[in-house]
Image (cartoon, rainbow, N blue to C red):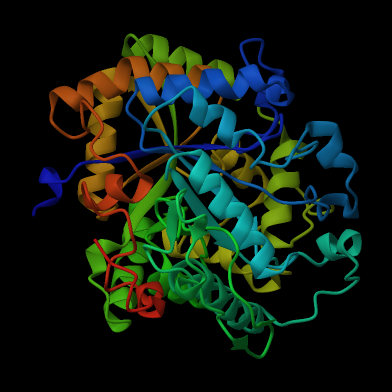
Length: 464
């Protein structure tokens, strides 16, 4: 299948906070992100995305704001850089209740809770959404988070955290895929048997990081295992994603950089024995859309007036571990001085190896949408740019970040989606009921047989 024949998958990227990927834009008079505390805010967003036939809403998360810039949380709190922030799973059932098809991808770190606890919570959400749940599996690299979790220092190295995440998923797969037979729940009123105990088994896990000997005591949800998302950008993270993820979220400042990550992830997936195209890759983008070119450019230029130097660097420094607060605005960044994580800096280097990045260049290029491309123009022009991105990079779809919320999403749904539908690049109606069916087709609610999690199924667990 050529790239021009593939359906483009559409996701929206959001955070339960007043500021996300466009630092300072919460000040725009049309922005409503301060309403993140209101349930109605999320219900409106869910309805808008379903009207635009989006595959899903991808919810980011984290426990603390960035604290690298100026060595304090003060800039993040001042500029609402991912703070204050609410827990993202709470509003998912409510959004599911006002939609029929929209999926919900939620970010939950494996660092802070035991796998049994999280497996039960995600099973509950998959039940309540009718099988529309996806889980973005992340590890935690920021040491400042641990202080509030009883861990003054993160106990493991970067690669050890991924080793632990591997075992974490192994436990979850055993709980979701192995512990219960498909026909364990009988609900036999006459015999007085709800569940046949012979068809529920202990998982007997005794590993390096976790001991979980018993059975799972939540009955299988529509998907058993929620769709697995991953967003790791380091080499170890990409390998983890290539092995486990059904959707991979990537960020790149250029077409060439995105192509590099796509090719690398697909190559790694093949090395793990998977069909590389069973791994769906979505790219972070932002858009500024209006009825015509001139109006779109004017809107974009107006948005730029709300971009803040301190706010953008607060976000960027939190990603990279570099404190640029004392660096002159036009001083070149020393990439080799990367602090807590090199992954975002690698994105810069892969995207444009010859560019000299300075704090001013960072703000100029990242003020709207951070490290994703910004698509500007009329509905038809942005549709052209979407097609070009997909066809040149090999991605499967987009994760749309807002400049102004909800205006960015509404404009994309009203002006870009109809154009892409006319071109046959996005669907005009949903296919399948669950999140996984939207990826792989009707009837494919469970993990594909080629997925490593499927290897934990019992003989009485039937794959579709």
